[in-house]
Amino acid sequence: MNLRRRFRFRADERAYIDVVPLVDTLLAVFLFLAVLAFQSPITFLAVRLPEAEKGETKRVKAVKVQITKNGSMLMEGKPADLGSIERFLRARKPKYLIIEADEDTRHKFVVYVMDRAKKAGVENVIIAVRKKS
Image (cartoon, rainbow, N blue to C red; front, side, top):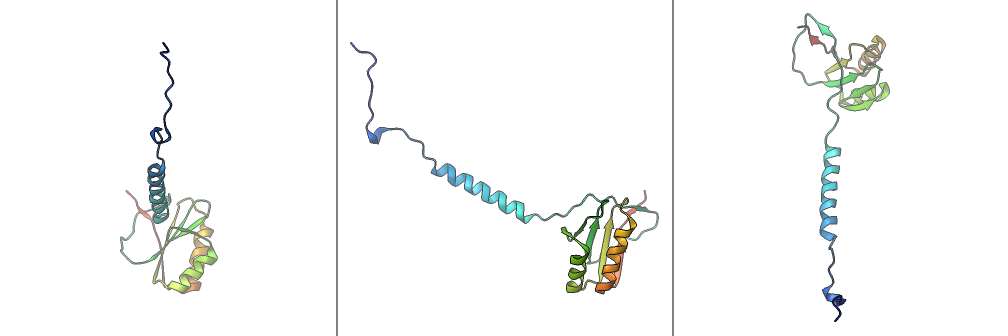
């Protein structure tokens, strides 16, 4: 008596794993993550504004330039250089430009941006500060 009988399955009885739903699900997840990655622009830059005892709080519609300690610049959340800043300002002709420079930024970087803004015809340049507490 043979207790170890081998069973042979026919072709239609074999077990298989269907990977199509798995691939479809992963594709949907990757697509969702790609859309999220490209939809969220850089809106925050770690710039520590200098403090001032006197300062006004104003709400104006303006173009914002952020300058880090090392002098790299962001305009409207996107990396920029002086030439692209001037071209952008000439094209948009904003009434206000807000400069958010880190408190440790060299003065020359702020002056460069102010100079390009005046060349582009910006009427008001505002330097952002923190209110001293």
